[in-house]
Length: 562
Ligand code: NOJ
Image (cartoon, rainbow, N blue to C red; front, side):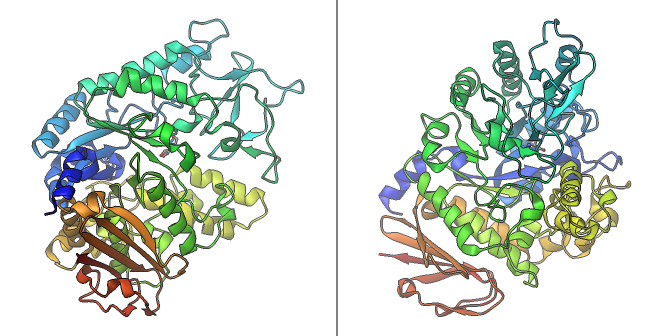
């Protein structure tokens, strides 16, 4: 090993060296026969996760919630939803995970609470109560209509009328998710206290939800309409408002600072040039989930019917921008899936691709870029999208909102359903596929969301026994990355930049270089890659390799030492 590389590796923090696994608890493993996953189910599967080679688990919210947005509408920030278990189940999970060197990462949803949170119930009760300004209240326009034309992220007005106060309240997301008023120091302190409560339980970090929306503009004014009903996306009006960093630095000071944890904030709207204020030693967080690469099909906002066909160069540009932005300072999470996105093989690779090779190709990119890889449950099996025949079968609130937007904007019900097939968040939320048993071994009851029909072949039990499975490819790659200085911290350089079919990049440290090439098409593509002349094949998603061509959706890793 080259001395310089060893130093590099030693400089990295634990969360830079490991892969993180995201669990959507409702869909992971049901141990009670309720049809819904639970905390005990996660504890039961820790050995499986350890073998996968991950060092942290990000849990989407497990707090008490009316579940309008499956837990992102929280009614108590310091308790566990009884459907998931008890606080002692949670403490057991932390302890058992710890034995396996796995940390538990909690999701902080602090832009909004549930409308059933006691803070909101009090706030809405009158204009005088002690929590009256804990949320964002405004008078109606003189004609009685909402204060602005902002459209919530799930569709419909971002304002809801409240009879008791004779005022509107703001909700960036669903009506049942009122936005908290971060201008009020008591609100901020209450939120910091809740986060500290979880630190005291021993959690290893936080994923922070929708953080770019917490600071609202001084004046609330109508936005440029972007939909037939005259509404305007709220995102454009409130995301990343000037002054937000003051809150974030205070948050860091009062909660995160001095703990051996990591923070990763969901921050759709932070530009690469602003990164230095957001991540790194001086920044507010350790990492940011930004959306430029995952939203490549939405160059103009997030209305599903406005999607544009996938273009590889757009994806490459976005990935290269984030790799470059964090080359000197900061660190990125690498992700292609989460609970809000369709499955990555359906999004980024062409229809008709061999599903096993396709899933391995995406795994190769995920685990060889510079940053902390986030594997979303089922991604390690190559799980794919679903396509149900009626909107009524979908649970996801945004699918319903987007379906309505499509109808309002003149699309037929068939077309509106087609957009839901492509982009529904339920694509990622179908139950985890454990075995060939009924309901894929996820539950003995009726699952809360139907199981993907492909579970007979795509499941843990089957893939565990098959050396060539997606699961075993993931295991190999997580292990390979964890022990490889070049992949952990080597410099990134994009190659074959303008190629619309191949994504190619190198990672290098002093004395060695790795080349990663992925063919994103169904064609065999010949390549002019002189840089490979002295490099040796390490592995890929086919048997062997040929330096002059890439087979359909082939992914290869080469290494050169000098
Ligand atoms: C982002 C979360 O990932 C998503 O699932 C949720 O619906 C919204 N924020 C609102 O909390």
